[in-house]
Image 1 (spheres, rainbow, N blue to C red):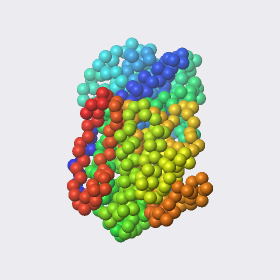
Image 2 (tube, rainbow, N blue to C red):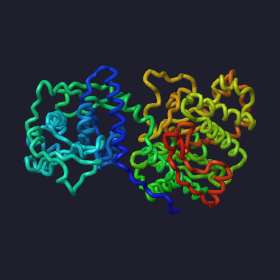
Image 3 (cartoon, rainbow, N blue to C red):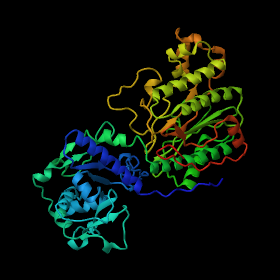
Length: 552
């Protein structure tokens, strides 16, 4: 099937606005804490990784915390983000970006030169002393870029180095005479790199935690370091999305939804799970230009669908699809770093039987109930409990459980059937950060302890809604043997679902000022799924992201 979609243009304004957002948050924090408004945010970029014990280079992806600032997707990059209020007002935001290609670095070491990234930090201070006027450079979109063409040839000359002010972060090759050039400032800073006491007062703000480590470059120990301020501020900047970011997330959802439909249409008994994965990957790359997936594809059928993160190296989507199996396919494409996270469940033969319909509709009711209740100010813990309650009610109506629903909730019976959290923030990462505010404690109760966020919803959040119902012996057997909970189970009915696996329905939802928008466009009702699997068309209408006032 061809696609009606095409990859959208990515405006560089997206990254400029992200930098502006961080700058405002950071300067506000520093002002509130009576700290000086000068220094650099210093970020260590990713490095190319080789496969174990070989020279095979794995496909590189930019570090997520860097992507918020920069559109470049190359390895060996160090970013220095200048946040001096004085310089910001006079020159706009300065982003110093250095391509630390290994051959360049080795050339410097051979001739005894100090690395570029250290003197570049000092360069901003030198420019602050100059009486330059950049009235023709728009605030928040200017980039200071050192120009060198002969580094790899082991020598630097003043004639080949300069400072160029760029507009809109795009190198302008024509009309360069319209910009102010200074061919004298950079060379002595690069070659001498002498530091005075006043220059040492510059603060480098980075972050370091259990997952991320601080940037390490030669000479960084000469500066004051702050490893505590940046991470919570930068994380909070990623919690809500701009309209430009939402456009990319929407496209990732659109092309992924289309690919899920393509997989549904082609799924047949006798195929391998990995063939379903292959269909998805081909469609999103062929028609959406999505080289990366947001995560490893989960293509689980039969009892494999009760394994929450099936599809890893030890369970590589390799089962043969059997008559009577349900398929649970959790797959999402990533476009220009922004992801999607979508799960569809359907019978591999194209027709729901009674038992499959019962479990599927239980999950669909929970999915729809949550989305109908979402709006700013609603607590995510309450949404999780709503999903649990809705599933328990459906299982009770279907004769799988019996008894008082409130008593079941008190005994945390919902976690037996849905042991994972309801959803998570989504953006540059599948599990975007910011789910827990500083100081928030994680619940120790079954099910609730698996929540990836406990926050109240905010306008601009993108969050997944992914209720599920699974029949997992490791959870069911102890609950059926526990005197407190055994009375709720219809053992005869439960035994019918041994080996059933599970059902999950997952959509990506954007919180608006008055409600929410489901960004995922997959068939969800049973009649829709059966029709699509029988060959019926499934158009994906173009989605317009609501503006700040919630209107389309």
